[in-house]
Image (cartoon, rainbow, N blue to C red; front, side, top):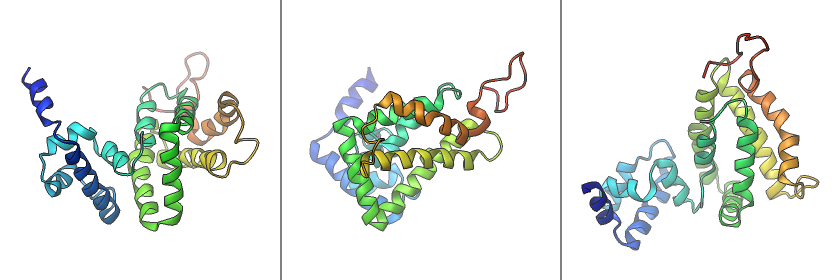
Length: 212
């Protein structure tokens, strides 16, 4: 009961949320992703850190909101990676395609990519966030030899598809149905991730990747 009432009181005013976002946006661009903490943003905005957590949940959530993203792809892929590693490539691709094709989330993502291409500060910030919140997390999940390199190759494949389909609008990928894209790209994504995306050998042979 007490937690429920406290959460209700912490909601604050709309201008408080905007003030937090203004501070976060500037701090992310000036200091980089790693250096920014929820506590530091809260202190500069003059609010309790619990209020920042209430509004945005995590640093990934604050980052996405500060850059005006309806949904942060890193958060989506982090959740997707929690499932079966065997089906992770196609699930990841399906979830990301859904984000980019939803008007509410796709338009801000396209704007972010365009901004990153023009502003070195945004480029560096997005790069650091992807390395720490996406590549590192996927590498930790898949495990095995060269996990970070394989996670990086996987993300490079995804990034190439995103740019080809949604930024450059190259055919046939721009108009290809999502299911066909998933069928086309899944083999290369499996190859990028390596042994952790393959099923165990028949007859109970050893898995190539770590046991889940």
